[in-house]
Length: 129
Image 1 (cartoon, rainbow, N blue to C red):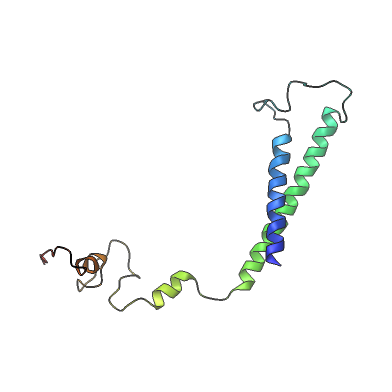
Image 2 (image 1 turned 90 degrees about the vertical axis):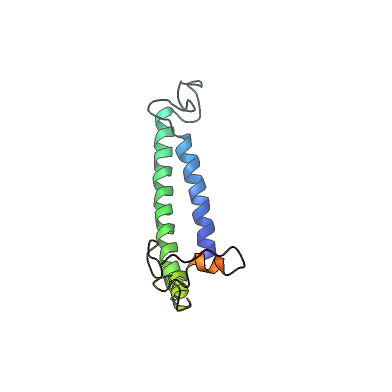
């Protein structure tokens, strides 16, 4: 169910980008829609095209909003499992400092990343404490 809504959501997003790029800019910066680059007897007049694109943009934006909310609701209902960070804190070794702030040093001098690296057979640095 979520996969189908996600595919629809992506198609709506692509269509929304396309419709927004087709619209005539006020300043004419893109140059796509400005300059009167066609004859007066076209399929749609300038005002009719603007109204059609505005309504299409509004409809696609509403559909995008609805599918976004639906995907959020489905994602929250699907899983009640703890987050990856919660699982990492539960399975961390006793000497680990995974729950501390990045600036904290371990109180015992064991379990830090430098202590683990020193145990790999590299040069030993004397403890200056």
